[in-house]
Amino acid sequence: MKKFKKIKLILLLILCVVSFSNCKKNNYLTDGGLHNVNTPLSTYDYLKGNQNHLFDTTILIIDHFNLKNDINSAGTFFAFTNYSVTLLMVSLHVNTLNALYDSLSVGFIKQYLFAAKNINLAEATLASVAVNNLAGNLASSAVKKIPGVYSVNLVNSNPNFNYFTLMYVKVNGVIDGSPNAPSDDLRDVSIACQTTGIITSTGTTLHVLNNLAPLNKL
Image (cartoon, rainbow, N blue to C red):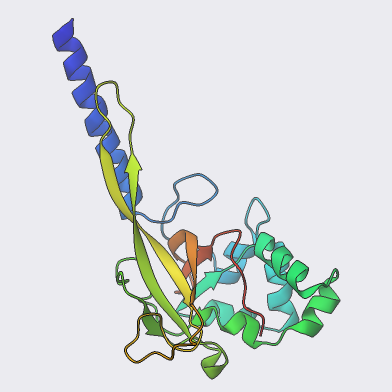
């Protein structure tokens, strides 16, 4: 009986390792489930067709600024959800979409769009690296990754597994930690992605910022 329990524990541990390995390799968890990294949909249609309607307001903003083609042709897009838009509206003290539109410019969306396709978790480093977004000088940005630990509670052990989270960085002035940075340089804002690495049919690498992402008004 003891030998059987030991074998069962070993098999469970192997299963956990394999499962975690798959999740780490395919960093595109969304809506609580594991999805194929490639989608037959365009970037725009993928967001518009989300089964939980997480991007309905985001799509309305994209449509308002006529950026559908820009979204589909971007190399990388850090998309944001309706929840983040709501937080932005609260911070701007507006309660209608028309008032929100009047408070924003086309650069608001473009700061999260990039021409480069290789902005992903595999290429990210622990230090922030500047990347050029399509808003240009209106908003500086960078990308980095942060480490984390995932624990599995087993009967006789609690193994830990390491993973990384991709971060979009809104650079305020110069990148934090830069040599000879001004003493009054504002701290950068780092936003974690809840979903990474979706490849759309139009060739965009799609990431999704977490629901509490503090969006930058432009």
